Image (tube, rainbow, N blue to C red; front, side, top):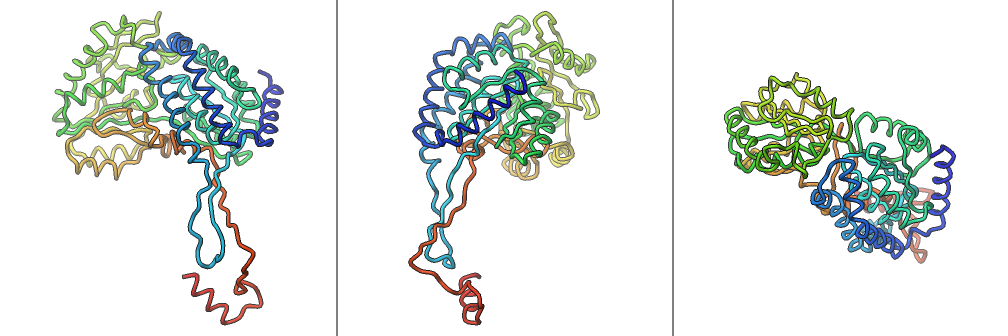
Length: 459
């Protein structure tokens, strides 16, 4: 798509938004209902595209992508009328007689840039929130997942005119053109490096942004944990989508006394969940492309592999891999892994683990396996991270009742449910002052008795 075509899309959306067509709640609900029906009607094509792009099974595609989008739409259909109402707040006595309220208002023309690892869910979930809040949207899916991008374009073009929701496909050139345009809000999910570029461009127009990034999310296992259950849930979270999940446990940080037992249970769980030959498991995904495949192979130290390590270049698959005796100076600990490679490190005390984690950039997620409530309170209070779970992995993002987002280097802002509506909404603070009374004390000339009245009200 050319630069001029992108400019024209943004211009048409701004004109459309200014007509007020997106403001009525009934129009927002109609748009969401239309999107729900389209997704349901194209489920087979969505899952086929995800299979081609990432090797996902139909079950995983529904559980982690299609179903989650439908759930978000259902939530917004139920709650948007309430979210969009004016919210009356208390008026201080000094403003007698007035009515004070917050008016939810859409930002306007929004840009949603999504990644390739969950290309359907991470495109449409923020779009659902943007539409519920009354915005228009330009959607830019990743060039690395072209089959899913094609299905997204098909579905959204069926549901909406481009002046309301438009899809821009392509690569770096299109991204650059979009970021040079003036949007009212930008929602970006992807890498930290690109996130910095998004923020730099947004600063040109002082455009607010949400950045959903990533990082090295730790998984702490202490000596009181249920090791069998921990291994089962860690294996699920780590190797889901072939490890290409932004909130996957990046590394396991376990108490030295339980490391050997944990490794044995992890090995058992990998065989149980993925079979003795994971590379031939039809439900096991693949790496998105050869570039990332080679990057991941470069992080594997064969001398430290205690499980897996095999790969098939023809299918871009890497076995669920576990590395032992890893240190924080190893190559695998220098960047977010984003693949099916799990390093295991050890600590001798929880305080030591907390200090080390806080020394590193803030992660998107943190997981803690323990039966010690004091440990839960200590870790959740002292460690900085976006969100996480106690005695499980990744499921914290699967609820519309809590916002999901990063912290520090792992991002800013959040979405899902009410938090998502708020992200794409500006709340105007309004005082409606009555005309039948006008207290004179605030006007000049100032008098002593007026000062006494002001001090009475304002303290």
